[in-house]
Length: 281
Ligand SMILES: C[S@@+](CC[C@H](N)C(=O)[O-])C[C@H]1O[C@@H](n2cnc3c(N)ncnc32)[C@H](O)[C@@H]1O
Image (cartoon, rainbow, N blue to C red; front, side, top):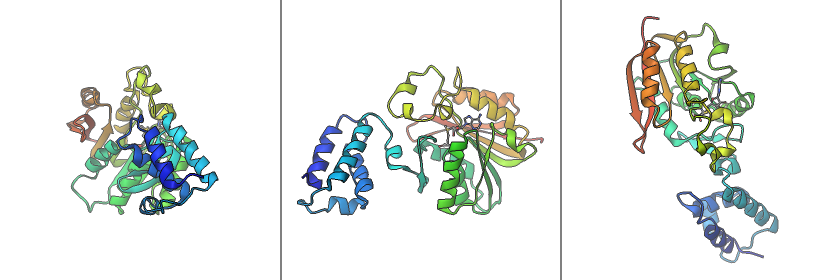
Protein backbone atom coordinates (compact mmCIF):
# COMPACT_ATOMS: atom_id res chain seq x y z
CA UNK A 1 0.00 0.00 0.00
CA UNK A 2 1.15 3.53 -0.82
CA UNK A 3 1.68 6.21 1.79
CA UNK A 4 0.04 9.62 1.38
CA UNK A 5 3.47 11.26 1.17
CA UNK A 6 4.64 8.86 -1.56
CA UNK A 7 1.44 9.40 -3.52
CA UNK A 8 1.84 13.19 -3.36
CA UNK A 9 5.50 13.06 -4.53
CA UNK A 10 4.71 10.70 -7.40
CA UNK A 11 1.61 12.62 -8.52
CA UNK A 12 3.43 15.97 -8.36
CA UNK A 13 6.19 14.61 -10.61
CA UNK A 14 3.64 13.35 -13.14
CA UNK A 15 1.85 16.72 -13.04
CA UNK A 16 4.96 18.71 -13.90
CA UNK A 17 3.75 18.86 -17.50
CA UNK A 18 0.54 20.61 -16.47
CA UNK A 19 0.16 24.17 -17.64
CA UNK A 20 -0.70 25.18 -14.09
CA UNK A 21 0.98 27.63 -11.75
CA UNK A 22 1.87 25.07 -9.09
CA UNK A 23 1.31 21.35 -9.90
CA UNK A 24 1.74 20.34 -6.24
CA UNK A 25 -1.14 22.60 -5.25
CA UNK A 26 -3.43 20.78 -7.69
CA UNK A 27 -2.37 17.41 -6.27
CA UNK A 28 -3.01 18.71 -2.73
CA UNK A 29 -6.41 20.21 -3.69
CA UNK A 30 -7.59 16.90 -5.15
CA UNK A 31 -6.15 15.03 -2.15
CA UNK A 32 -8.05 17.26 0.30
CA UNK A 33 -11.21 16.66 -1.77
CA UNK A 34 -10.80 12.86 -1.87
CA UNK A 35 -9.64 12.38 1.72
CA UNK A 36 -12.01 15.03 3.12
CA UNK A 37 -9.38 16.82 5.16
CA UNK A 38 -8.03 20.40 5.12
CA UNK A 39 -4.65 21.15 3.54
CA UNK A 40 -2.85 21.64 6.87
CA UNK A 41 -3.94 18.14 7.96
CA UNK A 42 -3.06 16.61 4.59
CA UNK A 43 0.46 18.06 4.63
CA UNK A 44 0.97 17.19 8.29
CA UNK A 45 -0.14 13.57 7.85
CA UNK A 46 2.08 10.90 9.37
CA UNK A 47 4.80 9.93 6.80
CA UNK A 48 3.87 6.29 7.40
CA UNK A 49 0.09 6.77 6.92
CA UNK A 50 -1.16 4.63 4.07
CA UNK A 51 -4.00 5.57 1.72
CA UNK A 52 -7.12 3.49 1.62
CA UNK A 53 -7.05 1.72 -1.80
CA UNK A 54 -10.44 3.20 -2.76
CA UNK A 55 -9.22 6.72 -2.02
CA UNK A 56 -6.02 6.05 -3.95
CA UNK A 57 -8.02 4.88 -6.96
CA UNK A 58 -10.28 7.97 -6.80
CA UNK A 59 -7.32 10.36 -6.39
CA UNK A 60 -5.51 8.65 -9.31
CA UNK A 61 -8.62 8.91 -11.50
CA UNK A 62 -9.06 12.63 -10.76
CA UNK A 63 -5.36 13.29 -11.43
CA UNK A 64 -5.67 11.50 -14.80
CA UNK A 65 -8.69 13.64 -15.74
CA UNK A 66 -6.79 16.78 -14.69
CA UNK A 67 -3.84 15.71 -16.87
CA UNK A 68 -6.29 15.37 -19.80
CA UNK A 69 -7.09 19.08 -19.33
CA UNK A 70 -10.35 18.96 -17.34
CA UNK A 71 -10.59 22.13 -15.21
CA UNK A 72 -9.70 21.63 -11.55
CA UNK A 73 -12.90 23.45 -10.55
CA UNK A 74 -15.07 20.81 -12.29
CA UNK A 75 -13.17 18.01 -10.55
CA UNK A 76 -13.61 19.67 -7.16
CA UNK A 77 -17.15 20.89 -7.92
CA UNK A 78 -16.32 24.32 -6.49
CA UNK A 79 -14.62 27.57 -7.48
CA UNK A 80 -13.70 30.70 -5.55
CA UNK A 81 -14.98 34.06 -6.80
CA UNK A 82 -14.95 37.33 -4.86
CA UNK A 83 -14.23 35.31 -1.69
CA UNK A 84 -17.41 33.28 -2.28
CA UNK A 85 -17.20 29.53 -2.56
CA UNK A 86 -19.40 28.63 -5.54
CA UNK A 87 -20.65 25.29 -6.72
CA UNK A 88 -19.74 24.71 -10.37
CA UNK A 89 -20.47 21.93 -12.86
CA UNK A 90 -19.82 21.47 -16.59
CA UNK A 91 -23.18 23.28 -17.11
CA UNK A 92 -21.57 26.62 -16.21
CA UNK A 93 -18.45 28.58 -17.06
CA UNK A 94 -15.82 28.40 -14.31
CA UNK A 95 -15.82 31.99 -12.93
CA UNK A 96 -12.55 33.73 -13.78
CA UNK A 97 -10.57 36.06 -11.49
CA UNK A 98 -10.54 38.80 -14.17
CA UNK A 99 -14.36 39.00 -13.95
CA UNK A 100 -13.88 40.48 -10.47
CA UNK A 101 -12.91 43.70 -12.30
CA UNK A 102 -16.50 43.91 -13.59
CA UNK A 103 -17.86 43.51 -10.06
CA UNK A 104 -15.44 46.12 -8.72
CA UNK A 105 -16.56 48.77 -11.23
CA UNK A 106 -20.25 47.85 -10.98
CA UNK A 107 -20.07 48.46 -7.22
CA UNK A 108 -18.59 51.91 -7.87
CA UNK A 109 -18.18 54.33 -5.05
CA UNK A 110 -21.68 54.62 -3.59
CA UNK A 111 -21.98 51.79 -1.07
CA UNK A 112 -25.27 52.77 0.56
CA UNK A 113 -27.57 52.96 -2.46
CA UNK A 114 -30.37 50.41 -2.90
CA UNK A 115 -29.79 50.06 -6.63
CA UNK A 116 -31.39 47.66 -9.08
CA UNK A 117 -28.87 45.38 -10.78
CA UNK A 118 -29.31 42.85 -13.63
CA UNK A 119 -26.60 40.29 -14.48
CA UNK A 120 -27.22 39.11 -18.06
CA UNK A 121 -25.77 35.64 -18.78
CA UNK A 122 -25.33 34.85 -15.11
CA UNK A 123 -23.96 31.27 -15.39
CA UNK A 124 -23.07 30.09 -11.86
CA UNK A 125 -24.48 33.40 -10.55
CA UNK A 126 -20.96 34.56 -9.68
CA UNK A 127 -21.37 38.27 -10.54
CA UNK A 128 -24.94 38.60 -9.26
CA UNK A 129 -24.08 36.91 -5.96
CA UNK A 130 -20.95 39.01 -5.45
CA UNK A 131 -23.01 42.19 -6.02
CA UNK A 132 -25.68 41.08 -3.54
CA UNK A 133 -23.01 40.14 -0.99
CA UNK A 134 -21.57 43.65 -1.16
CA UNK A 135 -24.90 45.50 -1.51
CA UNK A 136 -27.43 43.66 0.68
CA UNK A 137 -30.02 46.43 0.15
CA UNK A 138 -29.84 46.18 -3.64
CA UNK A 139 -32.31 44.31 -5.85
CA UNK A 140 -30.30 41.83 -7.94
CA UNK A 141 -31.54 39.54 -10.69
CA UNK A 142 -29.54 37.06 -12.80
CA UNK A 143 -30.70 36.05 -16.30
CA UNK A 144 -29.56 33.13 -18.42
CA UNK A 145 -30.79 31.16 -21.41
CA UNK A 146 -29.48 27.90 -19.92
CA UNK A 147 -31.91 26.25 -17.48
CA UNK A 148 -29.11 23.98 -16.26
CA UNK A 149 -26.93 27.00 -15.44
CA UNK A 150 -29.84 28.64 -13.61
CA UNK A 151 -30.20 25.57 -11.40
CA UNK A 152 -26.53 25.90 -10.40
CA UNK A 153 -26.97 29.65 -9.74
CA UNK A 154 -30.07 29.02 -7.60
CA UNK A 155 -28.25 26.37 -5.57
CA UNK A 156 -25.39 28.83 -5.00
CA UNK A 157 -27.77 31.58 -3.85
CA UNK A 158 -29.43 29.18 -1.43
CA UNK A 159 -26.14 27.84 -0.06
CA UNK A 160 -24.85 31.37 0.48
CA UNK A 161 -28.14 32.70 1.87
CA UNK A 162 -28.22 35.52 -0.70
CA UNK A 163 -31.58 36.75 -1.99
CA UNK A 164 -31.01 36.94 -5.75
CA UNK A 165 -33.72 36.09 -8.30
CA UNK A 166 -32.78 33.97 -11.31
CA UNK A 167 -34.88 34.02 -14.47
CA UNK A 168 -34.69 32.05 -17.74
CA UNK A 169 -34.30 34.62 -20.49
CA UNK A 170 -32.87 35.10 -23.96
CA UNK A 171 -30.71 38.08 -22.99
CA UNK A 172 -33.25 40.58 -21.51
CA UNK A 173 -36.35 39.36 -23.37
CA UNK A 174 -38.07 37.84 -20.30
CA UNK A 175 -37.94 41.05 -18.25
CA UNK A 176 -39.84 43.31 -20.64
CA UNK A 177 -40.74 46.61 -18.99
CA UNK A 178 -38.25 46.15 -16.10
CA UNK A 179 -35.73 48.95 -15.51
CA UNK A 180 -32.35 48.74 -13.79
CA UNK A 181 -29.76 51.23 -12.57
CA UNK A 182 -26.87 48.96 -13.51
CA UNK A 183 -26.75 46.14 -16.04
CA UNK A 184 -23.65 43.92 -16.03
CA UNK A 185 -22.78 41.15 -18.44
CA UNK A 186 -19.96 38.79 -19.20
CA UNK A 187 -21.43 37.37 -22.42
CA UNK A 188 -19.78 34.70 -24.58
CA UNK A 189 -17.22 36.62 -26.66
CA UNK A 190 -14.91 34.14 -28.42
CA UNK A 191 -15.30 33.97 -32.20
CA UNK A 192 -16.55 30.60 -33.42
CA UNK A 193 -13.37 29.66 -35.34
CA UNK A 194 -10.94 30.56 -32.55
CA UNK A 195 -8.59 27.56 -32.05
CA UNK A 196 -8.52 28.22 -28.29
CA UNK A 197 -11.99 26.61 -28.12
CA UNK A 198 -10.43 23.18 -28.56
CA UNK A 199 -7.62 23.78 -26.06
CA UNK A 200 -7.43 22.27 -22.58
CA UNK A 201 -9.93 23.76 -20.18
CA UNK A 202 -12.21 25.55 -22.64
CA UNK A 203 -13.22 22.37 -24.46
CA UNK A 204 -14.88 21.18 -21.26
CA UNK A 205 -16.93 24.36 -20.79
CA UNK A 206 -20.40 24.91 -22.39
CA UNK A 207 -20.12 26.45 -25.86
CA UNK A 208 -23.18 28.61 -25.05
CA UNK A 209 -20.97 30.29 -22.44
CA UNK A 210 -18.03 30.83 -24.79
CA UNK A 211 -18.94 31.39 -28.42
CA UNK A 212 -20.09 34.84 -29.56
CA UNK A 213 -20.69 34.15 -33.25
CA UNK A 214 -18.45 34.78 -36.25
CA UNK A 215 -16.74 37.88 -34.88
CA UNK A 216 -17.25 37.07 -31.18
CA UNK A 217 -19.43 40.16 -30.75
CA UNK A 218 -22.96 38.71 -31.10
CA UNK A 219 -23.58 38.59 -27.33
CA UNK A 220 -22.08 42.02 -26.70
CA UNK A 221 -24.21 43.50 -29.53
CA UNK A 222 -27.43 41.92 -28.23
CA UNK A 223 -26.88 43.04 -24.63
CA UNK A 224 -25.93 46.60 -25.68
CA UNK A 225 -28.96 47.00 -27.96
CA UNK A 226 -31.45 45.46 -25.51
CA UNK A 227 -30.10 47.33 -22.47
CA UNK A 228 -31.28 50.61 -24.05
CA UNK A 229 -34.88 49.94 -23.03
CA UNK A 230 -33.99 48.50 -19.59
CA UNK A 231 -31.84 51.22 -18.02
CA UNK A 232 -33.08 54.08 -15.86
CA UNK A 233 -31.98 57.61 -16.78
CA UNK A 234 -28.24 57.81 -16.01
CA UNK A 235 -28.05 54.00 -15.80
CA UNK A 236 -24.77 52.18 -16.52
CA UNK A 237 -23.98 49.13 -18.61
CA UNK A 238 -20.73 47.29 -17.84
CA UNK A 239 -19.46 44.56 -20.13
CA UNK A 240 -16.62 42.08 -19.93
CA UNK A 241 -15.00 41.38 -23.32
CA UNK A 242 -11.93 39.87 -24.96
CA UNK A 243 -8.61 41.68 -24.69
CA UNK A 244 -8.84 42.94 -28.31
CA UNK A 245 -12.55 43.85 -28.19
CA UNK A 246 -12.35 47.10 -26.16
CA UNK A 247 -12.55 49.45 -29.20
CA UNK A 248 -15.35 47.43 -30.86
CA UNK A 249 -17.35 47.34 -27.60
CA UNK A 250 -16.87 51.09 -27.11
CA UNK A 251 -18.02 51.73 -30.72
CA UNK A 252 -21.16 49.60 -30.19
CA UNK A 253 -21.96 51.51 -26.99
CA UNK A 254 -21.49 54.85 -28.79
CA UNK A 255 -23.78 53.75 -31.64
CA UNK A 256 -26.46 52.81 -29.11
CA UNK A 257 -26.36 56.30 -27.55
CA UNK A 258 -24.18 55.60 -24.48
CA UNK A 259 -21.83 58.31 -23.21
CA UNK A 260 -19.02 58.46 -20.59
CA UNK A 261 -17.55 55.34 -22.18
CA UNK A 262 -14.53 53.94 -20.38
CA UNK A 263 -12.42 50.79 -20.74
CA UNK A 264 -10.60 49.20 -17.79
CA UNK A 265 -7.60 46.88 -17.87
CA UNK A 266 -7.20 43.73 -15.79
CA UNK A 267 -4.18 42.83 -13.66
CA UNK A 268 -2.45 41.28 -16.69
CA UNK A 269 -2.72 44.66 -18.46
CA UNK A 270 -5.42 43.50 -20.91
CA UNK A 271 -8.45 45.61 -21.80
CA UNK A 272 -11.20 43.60 -20.13
CA UNK A 273 -14.23 45.71 -19.14
CA UNK A 274 -15.95 48.61 -20.93
CA UNK A 275 -18.79 50.69 -19.51
CA UNK A 276 -21.15 53.36 -20.75
CA UNK A 277 -23.92 55.54 -19.29
CA UNK A 278 -27.32 56.13 -20.84
CA UNK A 279 -29.24 59.40 -20.39
CA UNK A 280 -32.60 60.63 -21.55
CA UNK A 281 -34.67 57.55 -20.79
C1 LIG B 1 -19.10 33.83 -20.35
S1 LIG B 1 -20.44 33.04 -19.51
C2 LIG B 1 -20.52 34.07 -18.06
C3 LIG B 1 -21.04 33.37 -16.85
C4 LIG B 1 -20.92 34.18 -15.55
N1 LIG B 1 -21.62 35.44 -15.67
C5 LIG B 1 -19.46 34.43 -15.20
O1 LIG B 1 -18.99 35.55 -15.41
O2 LIG B 1 -18.79 33.51 -14.71
C6 LIG B 1 -21.79 33.59 -20.51
C7 LIG B 1 -23.18 33.17 -20.03
O3 LIG B 1 -24.14 33.69 -20.98
C8 LIG B 1 -25.18 32.74 -21.14
N2 LIG B 1 -25.85 32.98 -22.43
C9 LIG B 1 -25.44 32.66 -23.67
N3 LIG B 1 -26.34 33.05 -24.58
C10 LIG B 1 -27.35 33.64 -23.90
C11 LIG B 1 -28.59 34.25 -24.30
N4 LIG B 1 -28.96 34.32 -25.58
N5 LIG B 1 -29.37 34.77 -23.33
C12 LIG B 1 -29.00 34.69 -22.02
N6 LIG B 1 -27.86 34.11 -21.59
C13 LIG B 1 -27.04 33.60 -22.51
C14 LIG B 1 -24.47 31.39 -21.07
O4 LIG B 1 -25.36 30.35 -20.75
C15 LIG B 1 -23.42 31.68 -19.98
O5 LIG B 1 -23.91 31.31 -18.71
